[in-house]
Image (tube, rainbow, N blue to C red):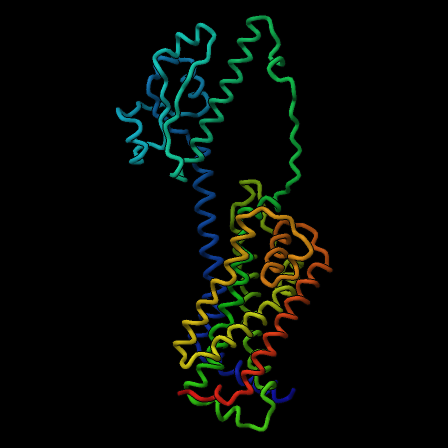
Length: 391
């Protein structure tokens, strides 16, 4: 193993000499993703909070037909504005977020004690208007319930008649578990960090050295090929897991500046989260490093290897999208699947759930087994003399 350590130190030293690679791998990758993510979340949260605190601008068509309703909306911090001539067109062209339309027969039906219909004209495809529409619906629903209760009282009836069942809600979520919906993409950033961290070194130690014709003299040494491979994979894995660790620490730092408390959420990335995440990510970093080395071994040039290895970046997207979009309950067999097991463990840690050591150990062992299989395949390729041929 002395030869493997020599190769390991050689690859690490040479990679550290390349300042551009070091900056992209250990600085830009781990820091840019957290900064961009936090800036996006900060902008989104602050914009929604700003909208919730400011008066709600509401163009109303036919406000003169329902003065009581309009007065009630004004009391709820709604700014009544004149409605445009064409409400539908104004909403489509985003001149107005929504328009409340009150029909002329509103007062007549109201006096008869019948239901009076109002219309909300809005465009659901405009995401930035969904909060305002929900707020208006809530205000109209509140006014509707109050009016219904007053009508029943005026007729000598109890408002409880319309509510035969009283619903008591007991929300079992915590501020930390609620934050998992907002930060559901964090596991993908960690996995992607491990992928990017080892990509440059995996390409350089195979296709790069082959193109520079420095791989052939290395393989000509009287050293078992598997030790050379072990040194190269060890260096690639070291850079990959370092990038993952830096990404976790960066998110832990910038997460302190997010206004999550204002929306009833918390992002806690403590020592336990860091240790557990690095533990389950270590074999995955080795798996990604081995897979990248295998793919790069089939390329004839550095540029060709970049193209092939870059396509592998879509592999971590698949389990991330599935687990983010499809509701699931963590089952034992899921921890045995590489990528999926890590995704589930990190997601549960973000929620503040108790993740058994057996589950994390199962994910670690199964991913390690996958690494062993890929390493056996890579060792067989390294025994081929064609690996050192650049032409």
